[in-house]
Figure 1 (cartoon, rainbow, N blue to C red):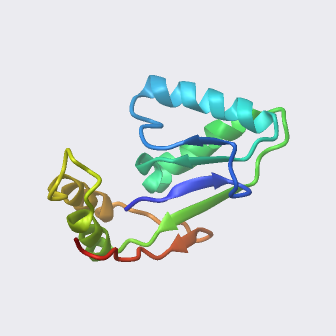
Figure 2: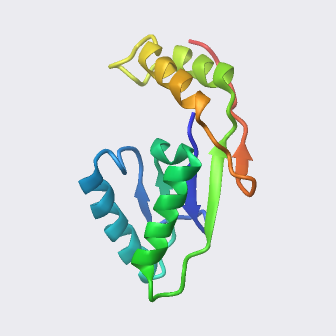
Length: 135
């Protein structure tokens, strides 16, 4: 139940899914790779639950802007899922593609923690979480 930052437009050439910031070293390396792609004019999407808080998100954005410089700054759009814990947990319970978490309990526990400090910026595009049909 976390959102993602889109470095506009939404069609992407370079995509990093989960674990963008799994460690300080990987985050630094991924930001350098991202900045290189942005300097080439490529469209990018970053998806990382760490950036659900404004502090982490704003620090990330500033680091990207600093790293891209002196090239023109990218246009950044923030797209977030709504903070709907019930819908997110419903989807964790019924999905079948997570063999390491067949009941969804691990993901629901993480959703519970994430929901408490999930900050949706005022200018964000908020996407509804649609409930998937049960198995």
